[in-house]
Length: 232
Length: 232
DNA sequence: TACTTTACGAGACACACTGTCTATGGAGTC
DNA sequence: GACTCCATAGACAGTGTGTCTCGTAAAGTA
Image (tube, rainbow over all chains, first blue to last red):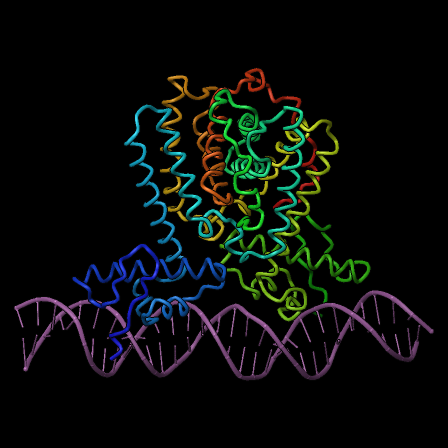
């Protein structure tokens, strides 16, 4: 009997229900669908998006290949559905956070804080740009580090002369800069890109709310986050 | 005779030299290599990274498939080499900009401005995260827009109450926010992510140097690094 | 000009993945 | 028990992959 085989629901999205036909048919289909999405995301994160195959996914999930085709026509569709689910979940969380807070200022702060944590948690999946495609090649990492190092050094010098805030490690500020400025790709005009630079720069100078910024950051976790840099 | 066929050097990196063996062997190999890189980037941008094949590339470039394998072992390697070339070129431009400027403050500003412009010009290739993989699906765009819209609305409200700067469109500020906070994925700790939120938020408030923001951004720009821009 | 080196295109090959279709059998319903 | 869904395994042609050989032509050398 091959119908005793389990469906891989390893990751956290679905309950670990190894039984087939767990309740109704619809619930079963949903469980299988989720398992497909999770498995695909895992494979993509591990071996690179380009190398994922339908055969791999079916085997890993524990279903027949033909069955997989009854859920999704191709891998693009799976990745799309996965992305859809991620965004929907995240958006739900953010809406909830927003509605639990009062006043636009505090609301935005709460939402952005939540978004930052979500971004952190889903690192390795979305947001890694070419890293996902190029399977974390050594050279890619080093190339990006050169850029990072250049910005960091300028920030470090500038902090000594008082041009930039000194309460946060230059390493972190450099990461902030580089990511913030990639927003330029989504902007419609050169003038908008210039305004983006202005905004980004004002984040580098001492904010008016110094009580928020005076945080130690001195002993904090040895800024050795260069090691685990999941950068593109 | 099939040796009269041209190598596709359409894009701007190499001179449009349709002749084989244009000068020396090394120059020829470099020309072919560049043509491969350009063609691959084009195909990836047009049909999605996942759908690019070695056969496609060879045909588009105008070389034999076996010949292509003498330049690169697989598509990952081509994408890698392309990315390498991009980063190297950009880094060179930024170093030049930096060395043309004096003082860490102005240097950083000049470099960041140049980086923003580079990001803008190479949009569609790198920096589009899953966009490059998912070939710009309608749903992906709309999902991201919902998130964007939510942030934008909060910013809009906040600007009316004076909590946030009103001199820049909420749309642009929302783009800035979302991109800046994706930096959280590269940070080592939750505490660092919190500091990132702080920095990002201070970019949203009226900077302490208001004369800085009212800058016309007229004469300051155009560092000329666009001239030799080999972008696709 | 004659010779050597280098690069190329074309074809062939086994192998893997794809997308589709069939036949079989179990899960739920009457 | 008879019947309808649904998943499954297996088979199939089509295509991309990675590697090979062979004949040809140009680049560099004498």
